[in-house]
Image 1 (cartoon, rainbow, N blue to C red):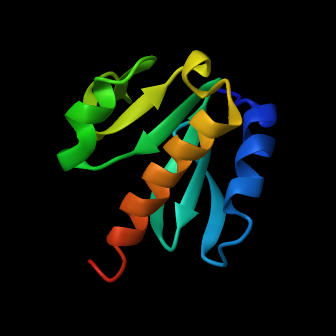
Image 2: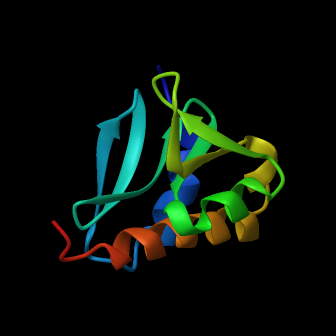
Length: 110
């Protein structure tokens, strides 16, 4: 499955100030790793965000989200955000920051 290159180009500047970010092909798309933890990614034209179990229900209550279901079963703690939910740079930055914050909170955990 291909991923939205234009969305990747919008995300990269949001992460450019960090020195612990790398990109990795994952889930048939592209993942943005903070340290060794996935923070966000792109599958098709959807943004995938790792929000963690504690923020999962709150994230799903926001417009244009749905559970991440790869491969066919929900992965609690991760959500998809449709293109309508990341139309503005502010919305995209907010979601990416949520994923980065969660991934950074896992630093040092096995």
